[in-house]
Length: 476
Image (cartoon, rainbow, N blue to C red):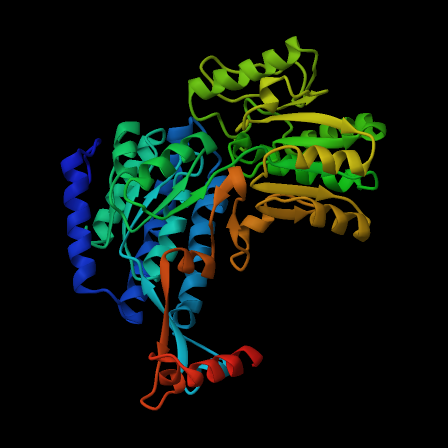
């Protein structure tokens, strides 16, 4: 398939898979030097002409600040590659493990081996980072990689395909582009591992497709990530940090705060703090180069419909933009709002928002807040704002989420030593740092039995010797 093709066919997919399988069969254990070279070339995909990459993303979104793309796409991928380069040699080493007394004088170790051909299906909201970050671990582990980026960001996807084709052979790393039908066919390939980032609903379909070949999957999904404002939280500290987490990329982030739980007694102070914080961060929205547009008209209309539905069901809609500001015709920028008094019957509380809308629920005590969090599907991320260590530790201990940032938002994602992944409906498996390497690695257990071994005392024919040896082993 030509790198400029806009739609991969089933024959294209089959050819690339066969090509990469044959290449892996010839080189099942790439050397440190080979893996390092591949990672360095992957780094060039994002660092060669950053301006071109930022421009492609901005065109796909209608508008996105260059600074946001540099931070959330280029920096995150480059940081991940450099971290892998620093630690690759150690990750590749076999692990010696202790041998129990009962198996002496044998020896034990774990070999870390590449799985083979890894498939990656990435979404549109961070079309560079979420396409290439999983590839870091896959290439570091010695695999070949097929990548299917989103069709909703076609300019960026085409540029990724062009850059990858320039720097990699097709049997190392290849990009296939196309619509949802291509994605469905891609998920049904007999891959050695499939990594998917996207919605929970589509993740279920991907898992079912992969099950046809018992392909192991990593599913990085989403859900409704809550922000719990405790009674003693410093609202002057919490509000700008919550606003940044919500409004980065106009809320089109899988770990964006999806709703806030606020003590009833603090509600009006919380609203005032959010208004003040947003006004300082974004003095305007429609003419603000720092504020990102919604990716397409369908998503823009969906978000507007969520606000209308909540208003019709009794929510108080609190605009966070300046008064008398109006969008230009055709603009897909959307003014952020608080949806105060959100209830479970509102659609905004029934689906992941992926936009600059923040539902606000109130609660009367920590017991109620914890119970409400635990009654819902486990989120991908959770944010706690509070000043008391004992209350913080209780919340962390009694709730379950993929990852947590305390007294801020998003930053646990940027830490390469912390595993990133969901739990339950928010995902299966984790990546980042060594977890990425291990996600695409088979850890082979190896036990070596020496020539002189006591194991023969347990061979048949069974008799008194067997009973004595087994009895001895049971006492060790």
